[in-house]
Length: 293
Image 1: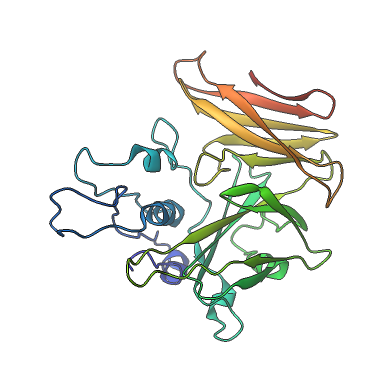
Image 2: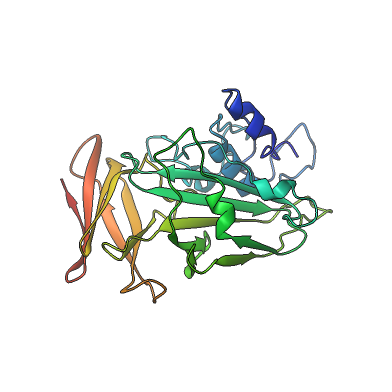
């Protein structure tokens, strides 16, 4: 249970110490392990928590036994990690014994490089009962140490594994999301988890950036230099490394609470032998393209 750091991270971050969850395996079975037949049942959960902690992402697989698929979900091809703006910490409602979630529910957020857009992340795990999550809980995460970040009054939200099953999440109609139970298997110690992502909806452009969904945190400043909404268009500055093929998902809705059409845009970083940027432009009439700046 060394990964259950949501509450203690509140304390360490408050005193200026970056949390750390300990090392972890990316492959569940390690040949010739000193632990015998022990199986690491939570490789994806451990990887996500390490990433969201802001501490070291410390792999402890046997040499040559790391799972490159798990590792690649955390970073660019040059090894730069996709990080949130602050460590993930337990949400206030987890301290309410009777009315709060019966398990772990943590929150963090990320932004683009210019801090013009903030994306909210809520992770649940070990919930023994379903939990009704409200917009007010997200609103309560606003903090004095980052006055630039303001919780939006309108989001398109989805569970990481199911972007097509999205929710309109708003302050206007007291939106809620019924988060499912995901109790730990007491025999294998496997802890199912869900990561909910809240993308702010711009009424200026009607476009929504879903991000790079092959990565564990799909929108961070390490990939997106800027996100700008103008009348009927979206402009996204994408940072990449030579040789990367970056797939970005965007959505468009004609109006709030309407159907969201989802598109994938490919950015191929093949022209500059280093880190470079490309620009995704999405317009109502012409769709989306990714071009060299």
